[in-house]
Length: 180
Length: 266
Image (cartoon, rainbow over all chains, first blue to last red; front, side, top):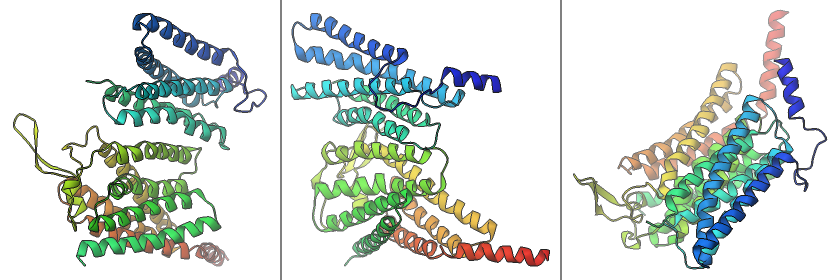
């Protein structure tokens, strides 16, 4: 037990304390960011070709695919948070925190595409879809705030909360988004 | 003045004074549980005030506030204060707080701007607990027929903001009432601070009354809502005053017990 505890500290060593909002990248969060950008560009290129120049249709496809991407990322991060925080009883690592910022950024993009569609005259299937969408976007920042200001450590529980709520709200978004 | 109006006005006055006292206490001693209770009591006050206003005039704003405060937020915020007081481990209390804020941010504009309200269902002096939702019967083929129109036109709460009401109320009531009963039990077991024990029991009963009357509304009997609201506010207020005034007794109790142990040992 002591040996695995020492091993976990080596793998997830915090090292020199980092400021939460420092602009830097390491391999894991770099991969998350790169993956997100590749997905975004891929969807845009593919859908632009299919949409015949209609920016509304491109946005609609982007919104659709990004919602599935967001759900996948939220589930993956939730699982990772559970593993690091509950199983290994370790604290939040800087790369996990930066990965959370990437997921939050993708949800901001998702919300912006939704608002752009509404500005172009689009209407969601149910009016509460807008509020669920806002909830999806805001679910992470509140818990990021709790974690970066937490004096009691470890504090991975905040991200378990945040990603759990995000998954639930995204699922509700699926049910209220499409026009029947 | 009708009895429902009298109870609404009384509840408004009591919660207004209570809110001011707790808020003043928070200003003097800025603890998170006092802030959460201040917010919860402010919503209790706004809810009962909206009820008084709606007795005389129709207002979508006040109806939205009445529902959002009363059915969604009050119990949860009062319970949050108790969670801050009793749950000290890790960041659990703060995480609960953030979830509560998130639900509040989502549901407030939902109630105010995206929930259709049927103004025709209102009339002066109406019992809001009766007319707030439509009365429906289920047909043999599973469809529903509206028997009496309500301000919320939908027969079912599924897919509407009303879906959150039982969740928020259950969470808040369990936290507030459960926390008060737990505290009272602790004081009873340690045989200290009798006033605090009794005060917590008042808070527990005061928290149960509005929850119980709210549950009866869900089951189709709104008779006790106004009474539960008024009595709940008064009892929680009394309990809070008893608990607050017992603060200095702790040291005396502990010292008395220490002296009794010394005397028994000597």
